[in-house]
Image (cartoon, rainbow, N blue to C red):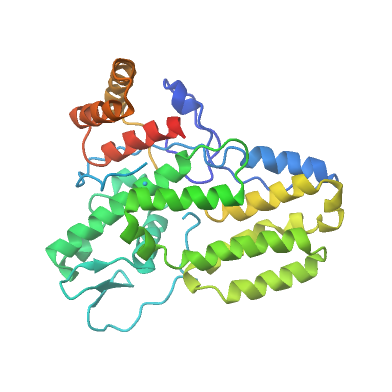
Length: 349
């Protein structure tokens, strides 16, 4: 069985830790007149928003990640993605997206690279990423220098792992906006590297500000028509690359807007719902991941058992980290290294 965005719970497996992770699921607001019932239903549905884990069976190897210190969230639709610019110096068109190159022919990280990856994921729909990631960029190989092509493949691998980490990201209770913003930013830097993260997500500064403005309006303005109007105006001022994400927040807020007049009955609950709605725009999966590969699971079980021993034998955090890094390299390779480290990190957050 394949796990994909919007799915409910996976069927039981032999892995208790996997079964315990609920999948992302968007539940509409209740149409009951009771504000508290609305809060209970949506709050429960969103409580596990970031506790999902999908493992891909990847055979693609990857240069080792740039020491993740700790690797979108709704994707842009083709209608709102920025249109390809005319060809110019140091710009190459890859599948309709203008990728920028520096004078040495190296890729310059920009939102166009993120749009390219999201578009590829949309084209493959529910096909697990492991089935297409290895050769999906091959048709663009001639458009780039060997170094730039290798760079693009590495960015794709890290971007996929970043999305997986987002889905695994643990939260205690429903996600608040400030916590979601902080953790999403941290994971971007950890998995993509500072330069790639800032370049590929440079347009997200405006989206994050929109999320904050949305929350302020929802908590201060009691006229739903005025709130709707102001939010629509703000969306039009955003870069086209993130407008669909902001629009998604507004679309999901329709029933919440209808409760503005009675929000005083439970202001804390209303604020929690508004924060969850804003946070959901920043955390929505776009990739489909297959069930764990049996061989990977065998090695992961071996890793878990040995890891417990190592942590008991090495009380020093530094020695533990060194021993675990060595163990990972013995049992895993390529993107598996990032994946295992993400699983370890999730237990420590």
